[in-house]
Image (cartoon, rainbow, N blue to C red; front, side, top):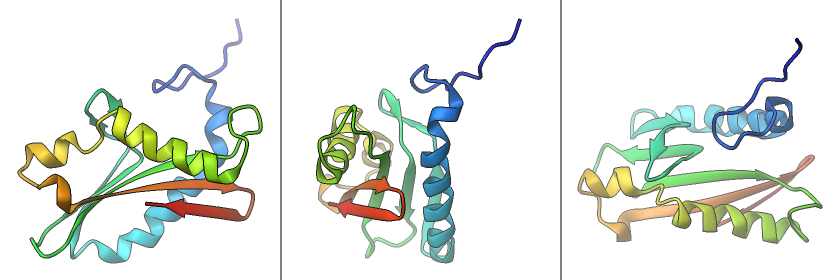
Length: 126
């Protein structure tokens, strides 16, 4: 019997997640240079869900960052802007910053970024 791999996050076949994985890896590569200032984690559980990227500051002068990525889909989103807003709403709805607040980081020091990708076009909202 031939079966398709399933993502544990949402039950979708893994190949549907391939574009998001590419962008995820790209952004992780860009943040690698900040490893001296941040503890960078990816695809870990926090709250009732699994965030894409979390950057926990090593110094109290830096803000924490939670990032969520969405690949634009005409079936789900009317615009790239809506996809970015959906990413931000997912961060809030799934309480992705719960791990950071449990570590004593004040909510006012946690920044949320929603990334929306459509081919080579990217839109980032805070």
